[in-house]
Image (cartoon, rainbow over all chains, first blue to last red; front, side, top):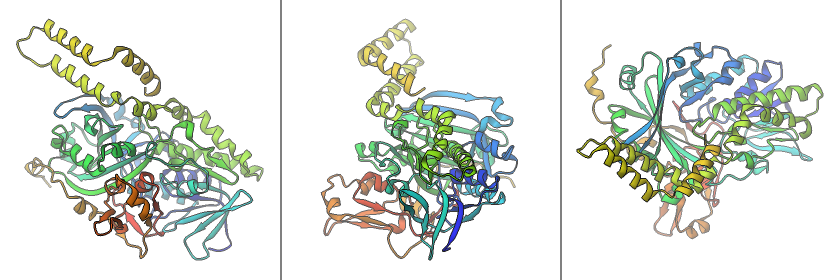
Amino acid sequence: MSDDRFEVVIVGAGPAGAAAALALAREGVEVLVLERGDFPGAKNLFGGILYTSVVNELIPEFWENAPIERHIVNRRWLTLDEDTQIGLDLKSAKFDVPPFNNTFTALRSKWDRWFAEQAEEAGAMVICETNVEELIVEGGTVKGVRTGRDDGDVEADVVILAEGANAMLAERAGFRPQMGPRNRVNAVKEVIALPPEIIEDRFHLEGRQGMALEYFGGAVKGTVGSGFIYTNHDSLSVGVGCLIEEYLRLNMAPYDMLDEFKAHPMIAPLLRGGETVEYATKMIPEDSYDSLSDLYEDGLLLIGDCAGLVNPSIHHEGTNLAMASGVAAAEAVLSARKSNDFSKARLAEYRERLEDSWVMKDLKRYRDTVHFLLENREMVNEYPDLAIRLIRRYFTLDDTPKDDVIKELWKTIRSEVNFLKAARQMWRARKTML
Amino acid sequence: MSIDVREYLKPHVHMSLEERLALVKRRFADESHISVDQEAFRADGQKAVLFMCPAQVFKLNPDDDSCIVNYEDCLECGTCQVTRRYVTWNNPQGGYGVTYHYG
């Protein structure tokens, strides 16, 4: 591939890279996407929910053709202790009609492949089994990439890094902050096969309806993390994801966390008869907005996970931020192309577009979420545990008069809760987590 | 085709980690894409990479307290290099390593 030159080289054919490639190729830009896996999606993983507002703009009514699993009509956020579950249940027929609340389950090996094919059909070139080993930098300007292939240099006006959570090139080149145990989540997941009829019966679904269950508190040992069960068409995605710092604090392995979650009396019945057909793991960036790098350099843009664009709140959005950043990067490149100026100053338009969109507005909103939870573990440990005990006691039927039950509940609250501290925490939780 | 509901009322069978790792398709490279600074590993009292790696790539060699790296088992999450800076993790050569069927 020596002397090869493209207008834009994109490193990584995941949702971010493919979205950028699609948006650029449609405008006639010569785009090369380099993917290290056997095919786009081969090495990619997420929990299982694909938010699709961006996809639906790029490919209207994509659900007619795309390999999605189910559309989510029912969401539950639950907290567990060793034997009890409480939670919030949202199920709506409004989510059962297009665009299905832009919330689907998907399996990345299928979805990413399909999405990258759309970019190819629009004219992007996708080359797989190709590792980018370094950026070619001349005088501080990124001029291309060096691949692992013989004569593998490719020149470009702009390189877009969409290399995923392991932001190797970006970190090594000094274009992003260092990854650490307090800003990286490890998630492990099993895909557990079950016939569609069993899934629909077990989770009260019809046809292609789906359900998303997310578990907090004792489900993950009171750590800053969560467990999940998402219904695919003929399988469940079951997993846990916690900050690496939390595993280090507990001296605990991710697979042990997963196994205990799966064995929990509230979880095990949902998995009955299911056969594990895949075990997989991924690291998730949870950088704060405040620690993001510029995301644009001379001849370079960072998008998706490698830029740190993940909403770490209860919304757990990642792939749609990835795709939105891919589109914003493409738009910035298109306007830079008009003046043939790919300098840092010109490419700043990318960041401006992100800042003006929900992407950075949301990341700003949740800039302190992870830090707040790490400093206030009561939010994921003592408080949910107390809520379970109070609600359970309130509804425990014995011969105690209700007046006495309520007195008992207040006594429990008074003895266990530091009101001033809790009021302060709730105020901050409102600002950092909601 | 009708399904026998009773088949799906039986408890889910938990697989060992080894069994689960065996489910994932991989193409092995000749050379390891992971290296460990053995002195720093010996100095790590918690030996964090031993439990933190979801694929148990890192094993303790009881003979000399060194770290054995079974890079063939790697699922390429990169958690090791974030857990401890004494691990150097690289992408495996293009076309090698893990290929997820579901993802």
